[in-house]
Image 1 (cartoon, rainbow, N blue to C red):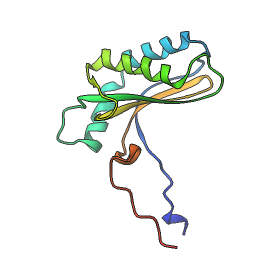
Image 2: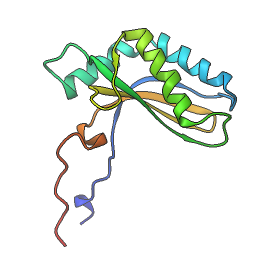
Image 3: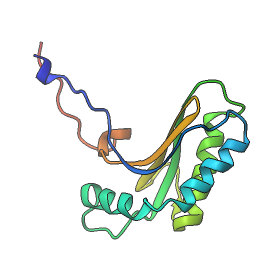
Length: 135
């Protein structure tokens, strides 16, 4: 039945969000500044720790990831780099693209961007997935 369908792909601990961003490269700097200065970091890391790593004080490594929709003068890789650099400046966590504790994930759609820490271990295949229903 419908209740057997996996409906939530992931959930995120909110770090920052902005709307009214332009589509130029200058908007990347605006988002990076907002991420670095966000007052929501401590709460996001606390939530991440509670769900993902109760025995850890905070992540020690991360990777930046992004998806983008709309016409922009930049690619998703530029978003990953700018937001990742802002995260590194804020926390000093080691950047590790393959063996990371968490991601700083940006979703940028047209003129709006949200940034957060994924809260499901299976986000990138890192945890067990439920078996597919028979039939």
